[in-house]
Amino acid sequence: MRVSYGEFLVVLAIDLVAILVLTYALYFRRHQRRDLTLGLMGINVGLFAVSSFSSTTSLSIGFGIGLFALLSVIRLRSTVATQEEIGYYFVALVIGLINGLAGEDRWNVAITLNVVLLAVMFIADHPRMLPHAERCMVVLKGGTRAPGSLKAELEDKLGFEVTRLHVLEIDYAHHSTNVDVRFRTDRPVARRVVPRAEIDVVAPVEAPPEEAAP
Image: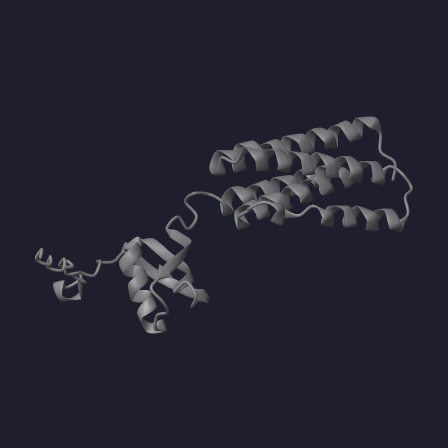
């Protein structure tokens, strides 16, 4: 598929506008992570360059397989990335691939797909979308707990209603329990008042009487 230089500049401008909106107008303003912003820009522009070059040149199937193998080398696990950031990462990849392969009269389809992808990310990651649903990892000290008492104990510590919990690890050596907790910040619960009888009181240790000097 041959495309003119003018059509190439059109899809390049479309890709740059789309990735700038995704990275700076959406992601950075909401998550404030500069390093991943640079990563999103780099992977998008790089994939656009490779895909647009392959669309204007007769290449073998092995090149396409090698391209996907190259993408598989990029590992998100090399740094801590949240599920939201993985979503942005994937959309940046798709935008670069769509715009790079767009040519001839398909640039209007590329514009439509870019608008759809950006609109989905704008709505799905909007601060007003499920604002009170939170998740955190809690480490409870003091040994194992009965499953029925975990929910009440976590609600007492967090101060909010726990909607779901999952025990990830029970460490008998260090007497701790790791729990994945989902809770609602719009549903506060009353904290349990600990009776005085349950408070451990440590009596002071009396010093041994001094022996009388001979």
